[in-house]
Every structure is written in structure tokens, then in C-alpha cells.
Amino acid sequence: MAAPEIIAGAAIAYRLFDIADTIDLTQVETLWSRRAQGQAARGRFTVTPAKAVAFGVPPVVLGLGELALTLGEREVRAGLTARVFDFGVVSLALRVGLERLDWSEFCRQLNLLDRSVGPDGTAPPWHALLERLRGVIGPALTRPSVRTLEEDYLIGVLRVVEGRPSAAELVERIDLVPLLAGEARPLSEPARAELLRQRFSYYTDDLAVLTWDRAFVYEPRGESDVIDVIEVANAQLLEMRYYDELLDDELPRMNDLVDSTRRGTALFSARRYAGLARRLYMLVAEVTELTEKVDNALQVTEDVYLARIYSAALDLFRVPSVNAAVARKLAIIRDTYEALYAEAASSRAELLEVLIIILIAAEIVLALIRH
Picture 1 (cartoon, rainbow, N blue to C red):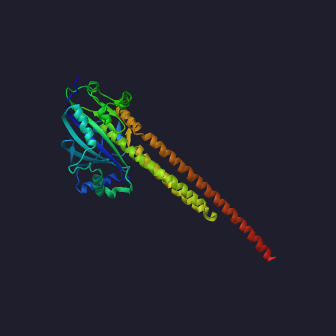
Picture 2: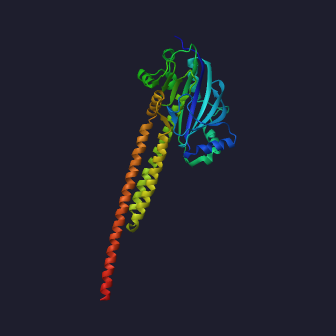
Picture 3: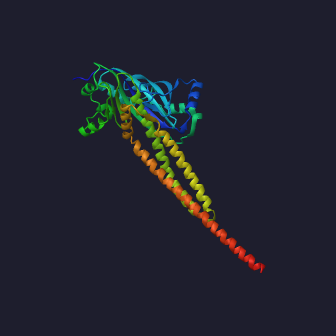
């Protein structure tokens, strides 16, 4: 059976950046409105009740207008939005409407969006857009990032398909693999099976298929909740990667500081140990607080369908693994500062013993002098 015509759909390209430790979202709304940059609103799920799934702290969604793009031989206009999360991540999205296409052309257009160029022949100006955003919301950033980590993701969305097929019928009539893999050459059966492993449906006419860097969503009712959940999981991955790399850099620095502290003069070692221990304790407390913000970015309670998609996205993106790595490194730093506090206490006790001995000796000398 021939593949049905895609009457209405979209290709969405995301680029996520870590730009700060935290972002004051209330100040972002104020700054954006004051400078008349466009619309600003708090993110929310379109259909799912708040008691079933909700953002821990609703992100701010900013309208950035449109951008001219060239997809192959087509000139298109892409809608631009930014979603700002309080834990320091900004997600930029390019959305291109795709209408009246056959399935192979739809896949081709999505793949082209991944390599799309602007009217000047360059790649989409992600970093220029980010700098434009930073220029407005800069005062709302707490400890802006020196180096910027990135994540990217592509989603193909079908809204209206010829004949309005069910999800099962649609999968029989189209091959999802070229879209999910971004490959023109045929894949092996094990590779195809792995790509299609994470498939989810709630109604007979909706479908979501997730992979590491792409997703396919069939949603005739025009709901965006599944797409929003995937975006949040990507933001959590990016932020946990940031803390993983931060602690990777901190562990060797910590070892060097401990070594230099131990090589110093014994007389003042207690103060040095205590000072270093306080520094490490503050680092552990700060990272723990911020990672808890990331963990609580989305709260899914009653919506089983979204909960399954969210859990699958986190597993696919290896968020639990990165989270566990961060926890292990925090445990190492925590054990180190506890050991340093113990050494500081021991050094103080030794110093007190020396002082007592000196006082006793002084008393004896003074007594001898008097007699």
C-alpha cells in the first residue's frame, strides 16, 4: 500500500545551551517585556491537567519571530522560540511547517533542516540568537557560564495525514527508519529494531517514537505535551552533563589543594585544613541544591502515558547514568572534606598538647629560677 500524503506536519530543530547556574525567571519576563522583544509567557502543558503533570518551576517561553531558511531548493520561514529554565538552560527551537508532501519528501525536509542554511549560505545562527537573548536577559543570570555546553534534537511531527489512519495503519504504510536514523541507505534488521524499540501510543490514533537524537510524533489533536516532555528531558541531560564536567575539573584541583595543604607548615595546618574543608563543603552544598532543581524540573504524577515517555527519554539520554556519576563525585568530595575536618581537629588537638607541654615546661623553669 502506498504511503499516505502528509497534509499538515512540522519539523522542529532544538539547540539547548547551558548559560548560567540559575536564572531568575520573573526578572526574565520583566526584562523581555520592557525591551519589547516579543511575547513572554510561562510554559504549561496544553491538555494534561496540572495535577497529573507539571513543571517544578514553569519555564518562560519567549517569541523570537521568524528566520528565513533554505531547505534544499525550498525557501521557508521558520518560527523561532526560546524556553528559559530556572536551572540555567535555554532551549532554542526552529519550527518549519511542512504541508502537502509525500512521506519520503517529509523525511528529506527534516534531514535538510538538520543541515539547513540561512539566506547568506551559513548554518542557522544558533549562537547569534543566543547572544541576542543574553543581551536582553543577562541581568537575570546568576554566575553566567564561561564555556557553553550544547545539546541538539530533531522532531518530526504529523498532524493531519491523508485518510486519517490509526497509528497501527500509519506504521504499516510508512517507514519511520529514514526519519529516525537520518540515513538514506537501508539499515540492518537489528538496527531497525533498536530504532523502533521506544514506541508509545495512548489512543489508537497517536504515536511517539523516541531515539537518542530524534523523535517522531503523530498527534492529530495538535497537542504538544509529548514534545514538551522530550524537551525537558534534553534540558536535564544538558544540565547534568554540566555538573559532571564541573566535578571532573574539580577533583584534580581538589587533590592538588589537599597535597599543598599537607606540605605546609604543621603549626598552621589546622586552619588550612578547616579552610579547604569549608570550601569543599560549600561546593557540595551548592551542586546538590542545583542538581535537585534539575531533578524536580518535571513532576509527573497521574498521567501514565507521559510518565512512560518521560522515563524512556531520560533512559535514552542516559540522564540517570550521568546523575549517578555526579552523585559518586560528590560523595568523593564529601568524604574528602569530612577527612579534612577530622585532620583539622587532630591538628588542633596536637597543637593544644604542644602548648600544654610548653606551659608546663615554662612553669618548671620559672620555679627553678625562683628557687
